[in-house]
Amino acid sequence: MKKLDHKQLKKLFFEFFKSKKHAIIKDFSIVPEEEGGEGLFILAGMHPLIPYLMGKKHKDGNRIANCQRCIRTVDIEEVGDKTHNIFFEMLGNWSLGDYFKKESIEWSYEFLTSKKYLDIPHEKLWVTVFKGNKIVGKDEESVQIWKSLGISENKIIPLGEKDNWWAVGENGPCGPDTEVFIDLTGKPCGKKCLPGHCECGRFVEIWNNVFMVYDKQGGKITELSKKNVDTGLGLERTLAILNGYDSLYETSVLKPILEEIMSKSQQDLEKEKKDFRILTDHLRASVFILGDVNPTIPSNHGRGYVLRRIIRRSFRFCKKLEINVEDWINTSNIVIDIYKEYYPELEKNRNFIIKEMEKENERFSKALAKGLFYLKRMMPEIKKKGKINGETAFRLYDTFGFPIEITREIAEENKWGIDIKKYDILLEKHKEKSRAVSEKAKSGLVEESKETLQYHTLTHLLQAALIKILGKQVKQKGSNINKERLRFDFSHDRSMTKEEIKKVEEWIQDKIDKKLDVTKEKMTYEVAMKLGAIGLFNDIYAKKVTVYSVGNASKEICRGPHVSNTKEIKGKFKIKKEESSSAGVRRIKAILIQD
Ligand code: SER
Image (cartoon, rainbow, N blue to C red; front, side, top):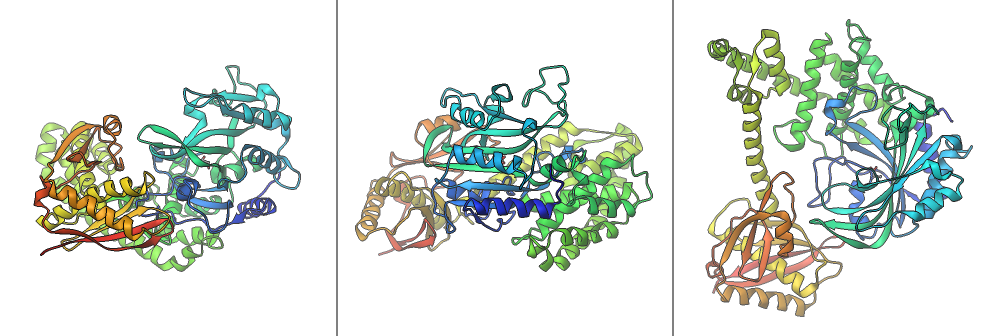
């Protein structure tokens, strides 16, 4: 195996895929940029490429490779062990309807085992393949390709959906995958010691090749127009395997950061290993979120809150490890130096990154002081009950920005309990409220005047009309409504003809004139889909969705509000403009003309 650092690994990977006629592209912002792009942060190399996997043409061709920065916070509690990081980089190659399983698998094998590239011994390779389900059969083709490369059948493990089916979210492109594992020890632990079955640490996944041929929307799976490949090779993990490191923190991207942070503390470095690692991981993630081409700053919502939480959590660990917060913040310089060659925006934003962290430190110190003052006031009650009640814990979070861990720590120090159950209920209610607000923002409604309600209902009719007249491929890409007009972006690959525009206008006018009732109903997502409702299902937590119907003309998942009958829509519906918004996306501006 080649002992490489991150620069050498990136270089080899790009050289290899260049030799296979791939365009090497810069990675995308850590924030999903596409209008209507889902999620807080980019979760995988393929995430920003979804539009292209769905059929949009990429300007650099059908073979692409890059190294994508990603953030996953679901595993935040596990950060600090050997293998979990919030931030990571993923090397990947993509076929956008070009090559398929044979080339993809053969190239992965070649890159991993060839002397010129990673030089991993053939015997160390094991693979998993999709064993099939009701919709898709077993991936025999991949089995045959692996066999043709000399991987014996007992090292090809068929697994189900949990392991060998990949999708980035509830909806979107997905498909079966085949994963390559490295046998680190060569020694079975005794149990059923196989990839995907055993967690003894003998096997580590190194590469994932996904065959993206399906599109899942609302539980329904259809075939995509093109057969794509999406692969992912975790950078740090690969470095750890090649160098025989025990943890990701020994790799060339993390070690210098960890060492610098450790040098600032007087505490027992071995005993507090996990905490030092957390500070290392969180600092790197914060630098990348702040220094992105689309910077996020700490706040109480969405992305900003994720950032605030990891920064404030780090301040707490600094205190525990007796590290000056300023020293921790200044270690950002090392993070930037490691990565600036690949992410010049970090260098450009160097001062900004450090300034923002310093500001957050000031805000946090103030909030902490105020919060502690508030706690003092609550003291008689807390003492009486021997615990911090749910309302107090929530107030500390909501008003004073105390992450729950801090409240917990204070409680522990004083030997009080906390009513976490009540806190969780209040937090859930609070989240529900902010979800409703952001849904409203998504529907494009900024305020709820008589005029905007009319335009909102018209937007539903417009989408229904476009689907009717242009076809089912039309999907909402964005919407913005004010008192004067509606604006609607949708996927469509050419401009509309005059006739089509006229037809859409007439269809909508007909629905206005028919004085249709607008009704709303709550139902499960599955039922809504069965009834043919359109609309995105963004709220993955809600059990029921609200569906608005305009007579029989439109049925759409939406939080409203709307007019209650189309007779409230006053005027003549007119499309003022139909133009290109971005590649494959058209934009309509429409108004109501008063006579
Ligand atoms: N999307 C897949 C993954 O993240 C392969 O790139 O593993």
